[in-house]
Length: 322
Length: 258
Image 1 (spheres, each protein chain N blue to C red):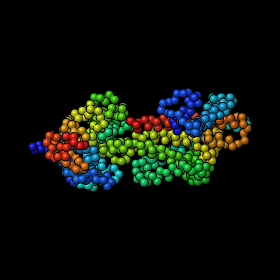
Image 2 (image 1 turned 135 degrees about the horizontal axis):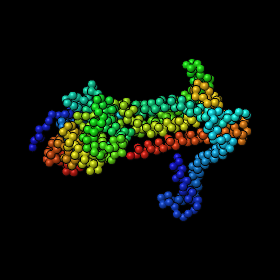
Image 3 (image 1 turned 180 degrees about the vertical axis):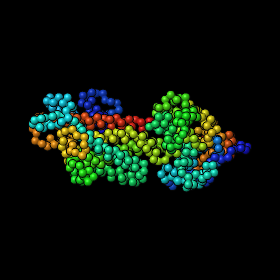
Image 4 (image 1 turned 90 degrees about the horizontal axis):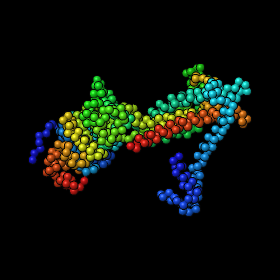
């Protein structure tokens, strides 16, 4: 998407300066009508870029207001997060970061094995017909609204888990983490399956030709060959887990102290932002500004994961071309 | 002119037929492959020569919709017997493919060891010795001995193909099938592989499919000419190319078609 946006924007930009020379291969569209269409299309592709830049600017602006009051040292050094308290305010972001990483880790420990094994089944074992039916069915899971998953976590999974773990709270990190993992399985399996399916048959033949049977071929040859694609799927999934909001907002509870216990309440960065944004804190107050600081942390984390994923999948494409 | 005395057949086919779906690609092949010789299979594209060798190690049946009938024997045992595990058969009848296909996730060393590791048959053999022996057999040792940990895919095309040959030899097969192993290689790399074949035939029974008639005359002792799924002629290579017994063979080797 980015690449197409860049190439379609370029002619308009140079056309606006009305230079007589045009790129030799890209003839200017003749009629006024076609020019208008071209401009319209370019505008469409610009929208997402402009909005993204706008979001970053707003985040930085509001976060700068926050950091005028709170030093970066306190933000990253304190382990209490109570910006909305009237006294005893603490601005250590760690409780939220740990809550986010904990639920994301639980989600990944569900999504990773199940997603990968589902991908292996779909690509290497399922008959073409089964694959054609199962893959879209699995992808439908991704279309379920996350609020539904949230209620599922709160009203079904938590009570069920309490049967096994009596000390599990009504709000906890474990249950939304697991449900989030289930939600992410289709994403992991679909992207991993693409990567595994893309491993050339010549590689499978080489292994079979050596007298390898199916299981070692899959786990020691094919999956490692698809590894950069699978890793890209994993990083995207982690990014999704970090950014997921509704499930944790509903089922994880609230917490302003550092806790590593998945059985107790926890609060993620996203859930905190929801809670404050829905509250009645006045614009410009420190509590209001704090959500932008947290949003910035979230943005940096997911952006990093997406960049890693992008680089991994580009590496995969480059290698598949040779 | 009589064929020279040939050793006992290592592999034989009788009435071997093969299909892709409804399309028949082999129409009853009877062939005896001599032990410790290089046998070339020549013929125009689509004549079934690749399918033929893929039937010998039961790789053909891996393709969806592919089927075969008739018998193929290895040391007088039918390889299509239900009791035969195709996986075990392929350890005795190795294969080198048209395009070099080293495992992209593995180093040069691990590529050579791949067959043994994947089949858990490394047992008491010392990996370093296996690697050196196989790479020497494939005439690749001197070029890669200092970079065994580099990825197999970092080598040139010709080196990759010799790596694939080393990988096949490391399993110590009795028969090596080669499906146009030089078609993706330049003339110098091709010459190296041909030299290699001369040394390998002392220890292995080799069947090579080739488009290149000169290559068949250079490397093989016996040649079979395939045409539209049938074996038209099978004779000593010298004889087949100097005095072919069939008009169609003569037309093909003199370049009238193909």
